[in-house]
Image (cartoon, rainbow, N blue to C red; front, side):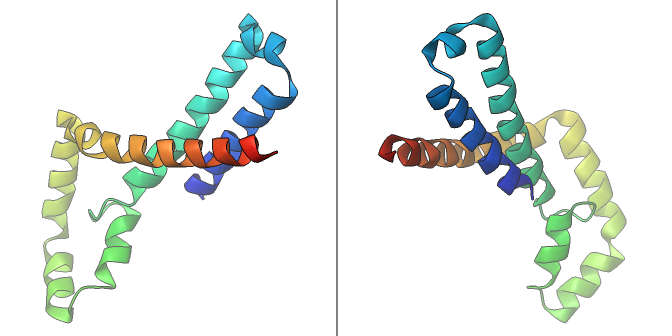
Length: 122
């Protein structure tokens, strides 16, 4: 859902830029609105990527478990508390941002460039 919202807000960003005119986009209010819409798209991508990390408190671990063998899944469930501590350590040290920031930027640039290409066709 987060990725769909990011696509929607990127479309809104380009729609405002295209249909509101350059006078609105260069005004202080227009600039603030465009930045807020752009940050909303980036935030949704960040939440989507973060939620897909394969650590047990996150949804990515539930997806990842479906591809594991029975023994590996059993071991993961038995040692789930260790992964909570690993998750906390990654979060507190800021390592999570270092890991997922390039992924967020890559996905956002792909969505941004794809939507820009669509709007240039019209």
